[in-house]
Image (cartoon, rainbow, N blue to C red; front, side, top):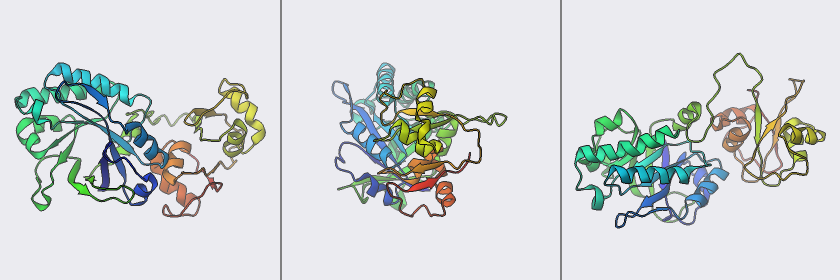
Length: 331
């Protein structure tokens, strides 16, 4: 079990590193919502800001969309809107469809509302996303076909009754309070228990913007990549990733670029190989880095953060600092 929080524009000021240091394992961001009156759709005002902030400290993120759909057609519109909001981003936790809007949904039959949930989820699944449904106990018991949805999607249950909370409904995540306290966030926070290793599942399957993990062990020429950091240059990347800054021209040409071309933070570059397999790959720590973030960008798998720390004779709780050189494990 791990601790996951969910936030929106109602948590405007966040110390992202402090949240991570507090032991939070993941965060679900509200990406947008449908206003139930005119059913206009809008992005959460701080979705992009919070996404960037948490990603910068290596915090795995997911997203949820607050629905006010009372027809299949509205669910389809919401799905297309959400896909546009998620484009270009990666999510190690699922994309959830939040179904709790009484003004639009309370009047619907269980069959009708369940079909709306399936319409949205199927559209997102077809686009390559790992999806789930969020609802409170009342909705899962009386407004949605819980058993039907549980066979298809991951479920996120909200029930704040403590020891009296529902124990029978299937769920992979339980939101047990809306008045939690987390270091780095002022005010109340929704806090959840998560019972499934979503980051490993999603990354291995190549969903939510991630590339599928290769299962072809016959090919030893795996393409190495590097995600450009702020302040990087071809020479600096060649120095830290290829152990030879003089290979900067080769690096540029390998990516179909000239050394005078601009590179930018977040850009992914392919790294040319080396004929000497004994060369120790290293990485120079950047400001804001963490073991998870380095494992994600340099080893293509954030879950290898413990291996990375141990490979350098450290514990994951040890402090790393800008300018520090870490050895990168093979594979």
